[in-house]
Length: 295
Length: 295
Image 1 (cartoon, rainbow over the protein chains, first blue to last red):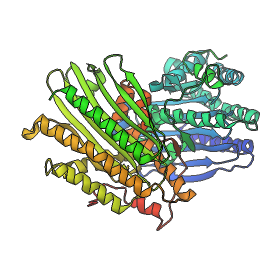
Image 2 (image 1 turned 30 degrees about the horizontal axis):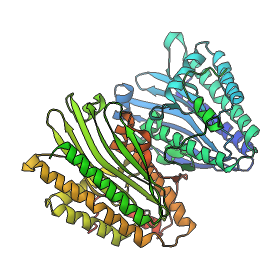
Image 3 (image 1 turned 120 degrees about the vertical axis):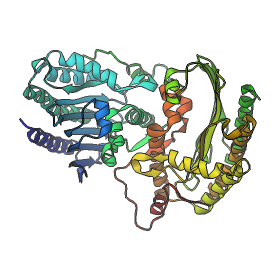
Image 4 (image 1 turned 180 degrees about the vertical axis):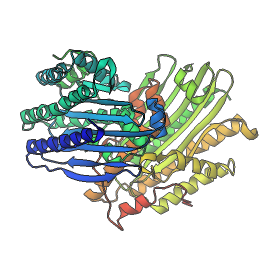
């Protein structure tokens, strides 16, 4: 299995997910922008602005060339040629009862033979629904358990730690799984690691389509919409202040519009928002913390 | 002149500016939150949500205690007790013809006797008005020239370099002045440096009140409002990705709601926005670059 086969599979995953999301949205169609990286490679950015998915991006890229020094330092790699490919997704729904979702699956290799997979899925409900949270984590656990029993507990904790809005002392949402540098440790083969990443990628569409179908027609009040716009502010704060992928992209002259497709279409920041005792907003905030066993 | 006198003057400046802004807005009144820092000191955060100033903050703080390690490393200072005081302002107007403005004036000292002043003012018009840009820079130059002929050219260039949205390759606005670590270099006394910072602080209210008075009643179309919301997105990108003051605050457990009062009340991010040839939006973008002599 070589890097072209992995990139091809990711491209197919992008096609498949875009197709399912168009069906799930009902009317929205993806707009595609092809871009090239001057130093080598490029990508297919696809954006949807639909009826139910207010703004969403499903991006594929496969880039290569001399390893940028900043990345070499951050990843502690010697100079050489790198290759990186992956799919990145962020979806901002219109209806506040539908959660925001993010997924990334990626493969990286160096000319000296080092290779690894990384990725994750996490869910950011504007209002936490415990039944959906349980279904989300149970599905990810089932996917993980098919490949290794340690995957879910380790990657679930990793997601809690990674998707954390440190300055607010709250998690971005209800977490999910996060993993990086999955290579040949403990006797894993590249085929086994890739099979796991493929399972994660394939889990995405059915998961999100269910949350979309179950909630997209639910009625909501202006106060629910307002809360959604405020929670989107936290999403922006995480992505611009803490997210390593975003910072790398900005630091290394990536394609800005593809990187920042993750930002919500409409956002509010109010000063010092307080939530009422016993309100659904307070209930949600009480669940934005690490270490919850959702299953 | 000791640090208490400097802090007292800054507090008086906050009072004065808040008074003038309430008059300029017409109906808005500042809401005040007093806060204490567990390790020493505290602040007065004042927020206005008025008729013409949609969201604005005028913050005073005076904090002290053991120097946090992260700040020591970044400022290359030995361990010790620090003291820092200043006023920080960001105003987001409702009318897109009124510019966003920012000012900061601050004083820092260490228990080993090191001291310096820093600060700056910069203007971020949603639509650049060259007459106003000239007046803004001319006023700042006049203020600077009263204290030293090198101040304006050096601090103007510093602002161009500092208020730069690197990943967008555009300046945040039309710049202004920025300065830091103004201490006893070249024979300057503390009194002289402070006198300069006082002049900067006193220039703020008349400058902004003029821009507000001249534009707050101007009619605008939905397309102008839309452009304002998109430009506010760039403001967020600068503050969360590049602004050192914001990052320090977030890194060092500052009062989050005071730090992030700079974020606009309502913001949009659209994918890959293009402006029409010959449009006012394109004209503005063409002027968001370093090195323009506005005077």
